[in-house]
Length: 185
Image (cartoon, rainbow, N blue to C red; front, top):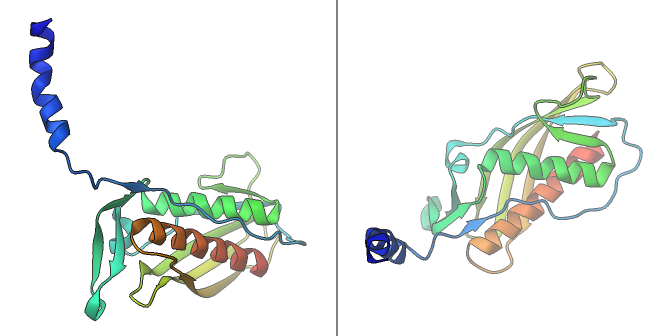
């Protein structure tokens, strides 16, 4: 028994010394109201394009003087671009009833619409809001819906402090983006 437990001692000691602040937060979209009369029955959501600071796994917040910094030990539980894309697709599906799926399109027949989102800024601001700005474009591979490009500037309130409040604010911002996209389509 001693021969089995002795080699495991260094692993147990390393685990005990590991930092306790290794929290990971999910990227979700808050529920929202249904939108009627959507012309698209199927929507392909392309992988969201993020600025380099937001593409990293660290949760980012604004500090004094406008500098951005990682909230110590707090990370997103998923790749931020993939997590935000999946949350937006879920939000569109729930609001519109359309089949929204993350690229690549999983069905044999193509989607009615393709959504491309390019984020300029996404971070917790010192004024107690969460900024999500950029543009989205809707294209139609089969020509079934009107194509367009539209800018968005979303400021979601941050209720509380720390990374969990920041994650909740991102959820609200993504829900608002899903609302804006669904109303524009």
